[in-house]
Length: 272
Image (tube, one colour):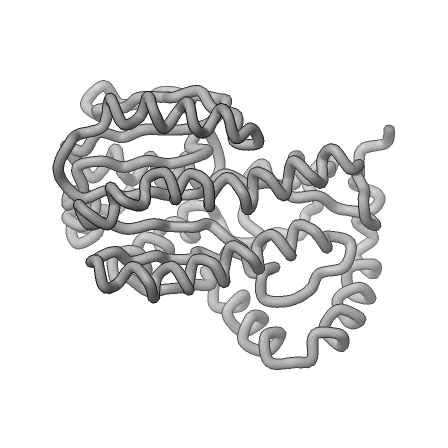
């Protein structure tokens, strides 16, 4: 892993780092960068699955939490507040989320509603419970949204809508938080080599490629360090986001549906 002294110093500036979903994907790579930075911060992962092979030098605690359940979030934050340092800046990364592919409400209403809970309600709930601490002590909130949040996306309609919510909520929260020395960053990746396809209902990789998780996290950390309210990772994704955000949404939706159907992604979907 290449050294980046500036990012290492940025991560070392926090006394407490909280991540949701650090067991895989973007969250796990971010946790690896935190390990590598040599930070003395207390680091917490909130998810159902603990990450593997954590450095013994890291002050790390896994707190088991089902983010689709409000009671679990309330309980785990109560425990977290007993364990976290009482002073110093806080970094909260709302990373957990998953998708779904197919004509609404595929792959099922339970999956769809749980996705809404994890992708939108959980970040709002968790941030609200920690917001006074973050405002008082200073710090940053990072929300992992998506390029899909910049336009309506047929066949991933609800997923894209949850990410549009997260993107706009994050930018507005950044404007509010600046008066208290708090910044918010919305990270908007395009396709990234993670377990997203499996969670979205695909039986195998779609082979569509995309950015490596390492490149995505590197760009994300640069934006976090610079306190940028939003970042689309990958230059091709930035071009797509620039144009799709400026075109009429009904037009973008129709073109998007046509393009997605041409990819014939149905052949990768798990058969029930």
